[in-house]
Length: 68
Image 1 (cartoon, helix red, strand yellow):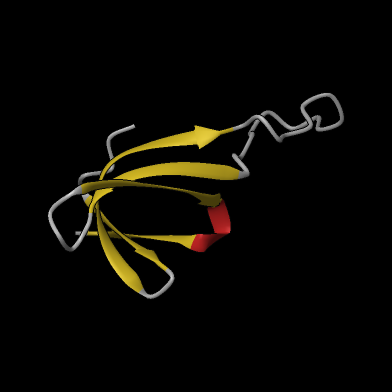
Image 2 (spheres, rainbow, N blue to C red; image 1 turned 90 degrees about the horizontal axis):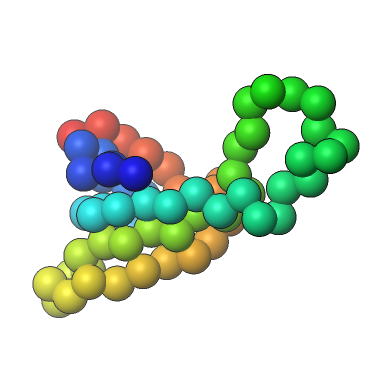
Protein backbone atom coordinates (compact mmCIF):
# COMPACT_ATOMS: atom_id res chain seq x y z
CA UNK A 1 0.00 0.00 0.00
CA UNK A 2 1.56 3.27 -1.08
CA UNK A 3 1.69 5.79 1.77
CA UNK A 4 4.35 8.15 0.41
CA UNK A 5 1.87 11.07 0.38
CA UNK A 6 1.70 10.88 4.20
CA UNK A 7 3.96 11.66 7.10
CA UNK A 8 3.49 9.12 9.86
CA UNK A 9 3.87 9.93 13.54
CA UNK A 10 5.01 7.04 15.71
CA UNK A 11 6.01 7.52 19.36
CA UNK A 12 6.74 11.25 18.86
CA UNK A 13 8.87 10.55 15.75
CA UNK A 14 7.92 11.79 12.29
CA UNK A 15 8.61 9.05 9.74
CA UNK A 16 8.89 9.15 5.95
CA UNK A 17 7.08 5.98 4.91
CA UNK A 18 7.83 3.90 1.83
CA UNK A 19 5.29 1.12 2.20
CA UNK A 20 2.71 -0.22 4.63
CA UNK A 21 1.16 -3.68 4.97
CA UNK A 22 -1.89 -4.22 7.16
CA UNK A 23 -1.88 -7.38 9.26
CA UNK A 24 -5.33 -8.95 9.63
CA UNK A 25 -4.04 -12.22 11.10
CA UNK A 26 -5.24 -11.47 14.63
CA UNK A 27 -8.76 -10.46 13.53
CA UNK A 28 -11.66 -12.69 14.49
CA UNK A 29 -13.57 -12.74 11.20
CA UNK A 30 -16.00 -15.45 12.24
CA UNK A 31 -17.50 -13.45 15.11
CA UNK A 32 -17.47 -10.05 13.42
CA UNK A 33 -20.46 -9.54 11.13
CA UNK A 34 -19.46 -6.16 9.73
CA UNK A 35 -18.24 -5.74 6.16
CA UNK A 36 -15.48 -3.34 7.12
CA UNK A 37 -12.47 -5.01 8.66
CA UNK A 38 -9.74 -2.99 10.36
CA UNK A 39 -6.27 -4.43 10.83
CA UNK A 40 -4.97 -4.83 14.35
CA UNK A 41 -1.30 -4.47 13.35
CA UNK A 42 0.68 -2.61 10.68
CA UNK A 43 4.06 -3.31 9.11
CA UNK A 44 5.56 0.03 8.14
CA UNK A 45 8.69 0.37 5.99
CA UNK A 46 10.34 3.78 6.16
CA UNK A 47 13.60 5.69 5.78
CA UNK A 48 15.11 6.47 9.19
CA UNK A 49 17.18 9.48 10.31
CA UNK A 50 20.41 7.82 9.06
CA UNK A 51 18.97 7.32 5.57
CA UNK A 52 18.62 3.58 6.04
CA UNK A 53 15.51 1.51 5.37
CA UNK A 54 13.83 0.25 8.55
CA UNK A 55 10.60 -1.54 9.45
CA UNK A 56 8.20 -1.30 12.40
CA UNK A 57 5.53 -3.85 13.34
CA UNK A 58 3.09 -2.50 15.92
CA UNK A 59 -0.59 -2.05 16.72
CA UNK A 60 -2.53 0.29 14.46
CA UNK A 61 -3.42 2.80 17.19
CA UNK A 62 0.30 3.62 17.60
CA UNK A 63 0.44 5.26 14.14
CA UNK A 64 -0.98 8.68 13.20
CA UNK A 65 -1.24 9.62 9.53
CA UNK A 66 -0.83 13.23 8.39
CA UNK A 67 -1.14 14.22 4.73
CA UNK A 68 1.94 16.07 3.37
